[in-house]
Image 1 (cartoon, rainbow, N blue to C red):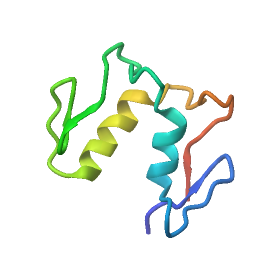
Image 2 (image 1 turned 30 degrees about the vertical axis):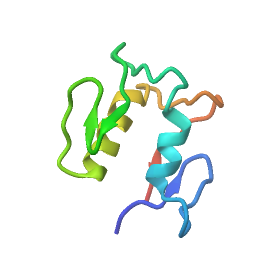
Image 3 (image 1 turned 45 degrees about the vertical axis):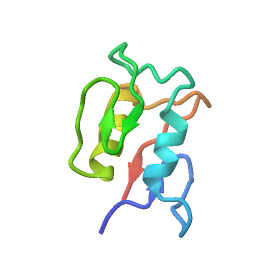
Image 4 (image 1 turned 45 degrees about the horizontal axis):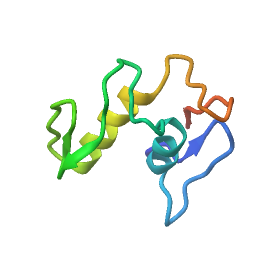
Length: 84
């Protein structure tokens, strides 16, 4: 069973998944990832850094990896991570 809750208290619902939530809290306005590169969706399942995904979910995973800081603390000052 996939995780549906975040440590901040968010629970997925029909119109917003846990991935949507995590992409929202970690995606910076300038699209610069923790690696210092710009990561933006350029075309269907392609990132501006050159990463080519095999599915939209694969691209979401790429963005989460690029934008999530090691301490998992987002711009709101709260820790966001999946909890079972």
